[in-house]
Amino acid sequence: MTQNAMNPDDTHLIRGATLPGGARADILVADGRIREIGPDLEAPDGAHVVEAEGLVALPGLVDLHVHLREPGYEQSETVLTGSRAAALGGFTAVFAMANTMPVQDTAGVVEQVKALGDAAGYATVRPIGAVSVGLAGESMAEIGAMASSRAAVRVFSDDGKCVSDPLLMRRALEYVKAFDGVIAQHAQDPRLTEGATMNEGALSGELGITGWPAVAEESIIARDVLLAEHVGSRLHVCHVSTAGSVDVIRWAKARGVDITAEVTPHHLLLTEDLVAGYDARYKVNPPLRRREDVEALRAALADGTIDVVATDHAPHPTEAKDCEWDAAAFGMVGLESALSVVQLAMVDTGLLDWEGVARVMSHAPARIGRLAEHGHALEAGSPADITLYDPAASRVFGRDDLGGLSGNSPYLEMTLPGRVVATFHRGYPTVLDGALVDRATVARSAVLRDRADADARDTDARDAAASDAPAGRA
Image (cartoon, rainbow, N blue to C red; front, side):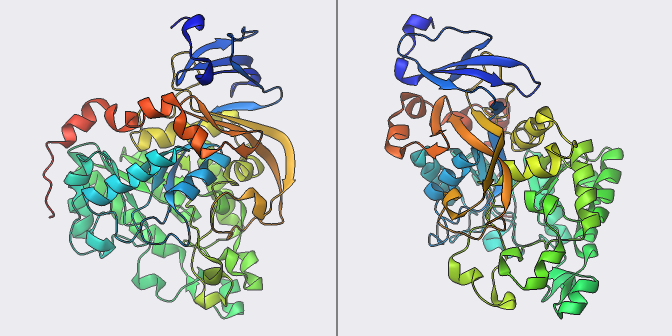
């Protein structure tokens, strides 16, 4: 398409951005794609110009692990409010965990969640299918039916609960291998963590709180590594939190096991010491760990042992957190603050540059989730999913910075670096000047209308293969 033929309503010139590698460039976006990238580009007639001097342009962020709560728990979050929070955080795609009500364990439910995401228009929403029926850990969910549905599910997890039965875990790994799916394990031995609510150690003893031993996580990862190696299937480890888990994952990768792993922003920054005040904002699963664990996680993310940053965005209503420690729910919201925390923990410490941030927050999560339309380098012809970020900004993070329904952020009143200035999803801005673009405007975009099902259609041969997988439960 020539510049004269471009639709001006869907044409934007991002002027003077800094690319992840450090070069300064203009980015011309039209009809959902990056049309041209380079210095001193001319704005086509009618194009919208976004001044980006001093801003880092990143490929749109992808979060492999969020809880959007819909259907069933809309008092905490909805797909609409969660995807708004994602856009404010610079995310253009999120994977929604299965612990909804009803559970995302059938084709009908995952298709509903995908449709809600398409209607919201702020980010690509890909549902994660449950491994077991009702997350009960007893019989396998309709994995094949979910994989071949319109939602084209490729990631399966009982997150919030561990697939503790080794036979069920083995069968699930065998099943998803047929269509290049992945099992994302919540590594928590249930017997070793009964009644536990914080990291096990000297501090838990002083506070009189039942401790959560590191081995409860590490032992499940070690078991599943051996199962994945035996089956020859893909395994992903959710929210790694201990130095010992890093050692197991590093060992597995050295053996050639097809394993990937994620770490949350809060486990890269916060420690168990915050629990001393019994503030339930810091109650999370897995728990905040020791300073030594934080340092090991940062090093593992920097050297590639841990592949991605994922937020584990877990909203809860006020009454679920504004209560005594033992009664409070586990979880923290994290979409809006993620990039700032990664800058603080990884970039400002010299452990990652912006190319590294693009790798762990865009390229790698899109690859693991088999999300073909996301995670591309910023180059001509690529889908125009772009995040513009101001690393020089600073803010006292407050409730007004949150776009979702819940306020259970551990960073409230904390000074954080950086700010997401703009987010482009499929070539259209969902955030400009740090503020959400009106949803009705987003929904009117021809690009979004024409491309609403693009992510489900273009996973090439892998999607076709899924139709051959059996649809019943094991």
